[in-house]
Image 1 (cartoon, helix red, strand yellow):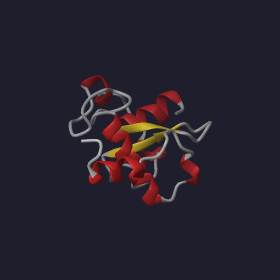
Image 2: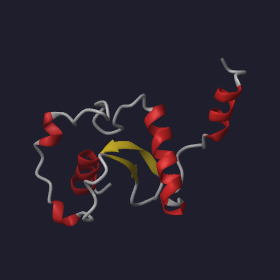
Image 3: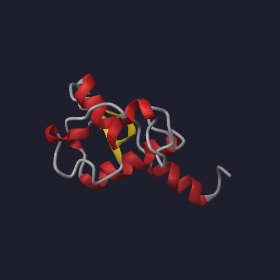
Image 4: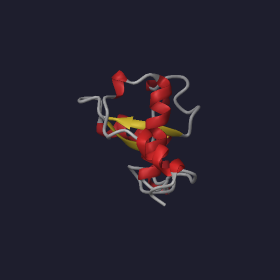
Length: 107
């Protein structure tokens, strides 16, 4: 129902993605992450698995050097992935997928 006021308000509150991660307040990052989750139909941008599930075995088996990440890195299971070269957001990912992107691919 496109003319329904609730649907219209939701659509009006969405932003054009991607956005510059470094210019976002932490509350905006939450909103952007939720928008990506919705647009990705609940799937991880990196591995394609549903974000409510664990990443596939091939991701989980990778050796992660957790000491290179912030202490609270694993506190939140779903992260807002962004490119560290351009600072532009890329999508919602599992925390482990974010670690793999960072450690193995420099993203």
